[in-house]
Length: 137
Image (cartoon, rainbow, N blue to C red; front, top):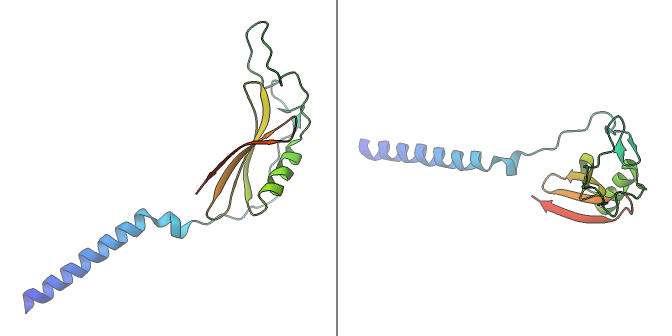
């Protein structure tokens, strides 16, 4: 009888530890919370598509080669890009806004999230077009 009780208690302890370990490994699904934003969203000033106080942001190119959009003026401000994001994803909270150029194409990279989803979009800084979307969990 003693052996049965001890076996039962050991089984309960092992099962509880295993369940706790699995919950611990998958805890983000149950405990993830988005912290409240305190104060206004930090917005870096952008002049002609370049963050103020930096160089023009373009990578030097080979002589005689000019990227097609590198010569165009940026028409979309950072605030306008954020509005475009909020129009497309009204339930998402903006996490990060970054101005960048890839292959001479000036654009804003905006990361947003809800409690269960994440999205990263790229908005063309000349036309305001969303040209790339990456969604995740």
